[in-house]
Each structure stands twice: as C-alpha cells, then as structure tokens.
Image (cartoon, rainbow, N blue to C red; front, side):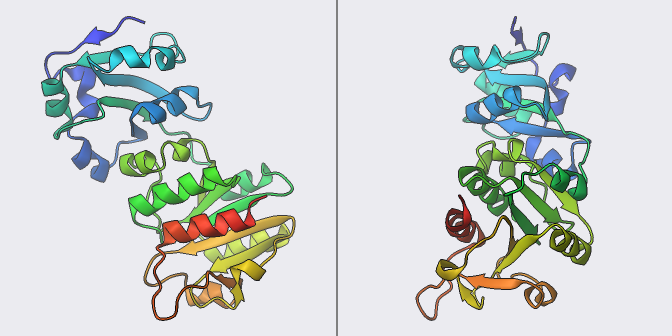
Length: 264
C-alpha cells in the first residue's frame, strides 16, 4: 500500500473529511467517520462495514502498519501534516487518524431478532439522544456480551462520529436495528418469549433480586424523563437501589450495572 501525500486541504480526494463537526450534524449520505487507532482497526476488520479511505498524520503512519495490512487492496491512505489535517477537519485533530466508512443497508428489527441466539440478551433504547450516552451504552453492551441493540426513532445515530469514538468502536461491532412502532416491537418480543425488563429509578424490583430466563430485553430511557409510562405499565420494572434522595447514576452508568447483572 503506497500512502498518498496531500498538501492542499481542498484537494478533492479528501473532500469527504472537510469540516467534520458541521457535516456530522448535516449527515453524510450513507457514510460515517471513524476516528482513532482502535476504531480504525475495528472498521478494517469488520464484515458489516466497508472503508472508503484513510486520512492520517505523517507521524502516526508508522504505528498503523499492522492495522493497514487488513485493508482491502487499493484502499487510499492519505498522509498529511498537522497543519493540513487541522485545516481539513476544521479543528485540531490530536488523534490524527480518520477514516470514511460506508453504512450498511438498514436491517429491520425483525430480521435481526431472527438471527439472534436462543439465549439472547438485547438492549432496547428509547429516546437516547445524547451521543456520549449512546456510545457508552454500546461500549457497555460489548463489554458484557449483549447480542444486539435496538433503538426507537427518537434515538440518535450510533454511527455519529462522537458516538463511535466514545463506544471505542463497539458501535461497529454490536449489531443494531431501529424500530418505529414501540408497542408493536414490544409485542413481537413477547411472541418470541423474551423477558422484558424496564430500568427505572422507581422500578418495583431491586435489580439484585431480578432473574432472567432464556431471552432478555433490557429497556433504557432518556435521562430525566426516563421511559414512557406506557412502557412502564406494560413491562416488569427494575431499579438500581441507591442512597435515598439522590438519583446519581446516568443512563450510561446504569446500563453498565444492569448489563453486568444480567450477563451470563
């Protein structure tokens, strides 16, 4: 693989990397940005996502040789100075490693459920709009062996650059799918014999007393409002008991506690 030197930040070959923050907000038409060495390794090792190019600081190239050997033949690897990298990105890129990935065609929730094992543990997210929380939940899901993540239509994109970075690439590893009809999705899980637990500070069961059967769906809601009441009245509710008078765990930390408890 022969690195390609780029000295002009407006070179059309690196146009996909221009003004990263602004374009993250506007969308990338089926593409996403992977940032950092670990995430690049996961992207190039993935069977679900493809890479279109890599952009790397000249002083980081030597440390990427083993990872870049995983790249498909012909993948462009662009090498730049710090000044050019910052001009392309629109801010200082201290990690100095970026790649453009291609999103896979969206998988339906039902199709993903069909592919899961008999003892599956899945995470169901409702209203998770903060990219840091989304990335942390994916990271925890990977750490504790969750088989998939499902999201309602109000959740943010787990392939947003910051979410991928916070997840340390777990968003590229854990299968995920979105659903639009929450009641219908919950009913589908019922038909598939999933235990369904909704995590809430006001849950009826202390999580230490909760036991899973074969299949489990763990529901997590946005901070503050939490899960909708329509879900809480339908599902078994569990709580992480804390000191009285202060709900101190955010949803990402709560997901780690719950996933550790229910993991096998």
